[in-house]
Image (cartoon, rainbow, N blue to C red; front, top):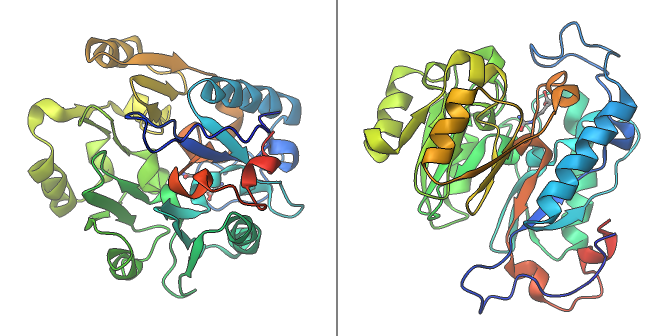
Length: 300
Ligand SMILES: NC(=O)NCCC[C@H](N)C(=O)O
């Protein structure tokens, strides 16, 4: 159990240890079909294997970050994908407003967790769906908020996000149903580069990406790696944690100075997710307070 309340996120530290939110897959299963990955996988996931793969990811990330947990709730088998809980930064969280009714019950469970943790809660309207960090990713320096729209997040929700944080919102249109969330095909890395799958975007979106990332900063993955969820990577400092990728991509990342940790996450691919989907990045500040509702008491 990572129940200690030691302040690993000391703001005086030049490299504060990040805080992540995860959800143990005790109740995880493929119980409905809301993306192409789930087709043919109904009831097809192995609970023991999913648990083993998740525990391995959790143990790996716990060496690099402070990992907090939200309890799984019956009836919400996709809660394990905490990236979709919302978007949090600087003590503010925009709670997701899920596109599919199958996931809408999760909203109140995640909301309760953030209320208890002391966040300022922003609820987004139901008719302009927004699926959190699944579709919204800050650039490494925080100056840009890249937000996807298409299958899940509604383009109109981007306007509200713009008013919440001092970041320029750049909208990206996702066009391939297999890459239904931005975090399945786009990952800003901490060295200022970008791991992405260009064919997942329409031409104006690609132009916006290319206007910000110079050619030498772009790491375009092949379709084969994209389908292995290579872009669904958790990058913490010099370490990248992700599903298994090709030797070529591994070499490219290592040549750029990254430690690459590949983990088997195929049980989660059956539902359309991998490493990044299983993790939500929280801001450090909110957890520095000695609050009686310190969510660290829930960490395991
Ligand atoms: N891409 C993500 O951020 N999360 C994966 C979500 C999988 C879930 N079965 C869904 O389709 O919403």
